[in-house]
Image (cartoon, rainbow, N blue to C red):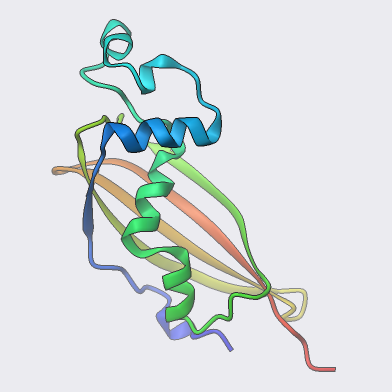
Amino acid sequence: MIDRSRIGFRTVPTIARVDAWRVRLFCRAIGETDPIYVADAAARAAGHPACPVPPTFLKAIEGEHFSSAALLELLAVPMRGVLHAEQAFSHASPVYVGDTVEVSRTITDIHDKKNGALTFIIVDTDYRVGDRPVASSRQTILVRNTMAA
């Protein structure tokens, strides 16, 4: 049984510095070829103060902070039958190479469907650079429960 008393649990914020080599590696992994993400001159020519990060790069930072696996362990959820169902990002302002990003995550909901065969865990993540919010995300984790016969 998933520990629903953890709804509202918020991680202690941690910080991660955005390094150019990590952004380059991320771009290579996802097949991103736009030079503004990896070439400082291209980024500046496009009006950026430095290379911006691709929108989903924040997922990589989130994983270093308090990964979904760590949240599932906190909730006593076995890893078998777990799927990353979806994640949506909302961006308030760009994140750039060289920024220090503060990350915190909150378990905002846990609910069942299909008579308990499926449990959905909703996790909201906030990203800040200094005193300004730069993005947020909402992740849905699906747990396929083994039902007693």
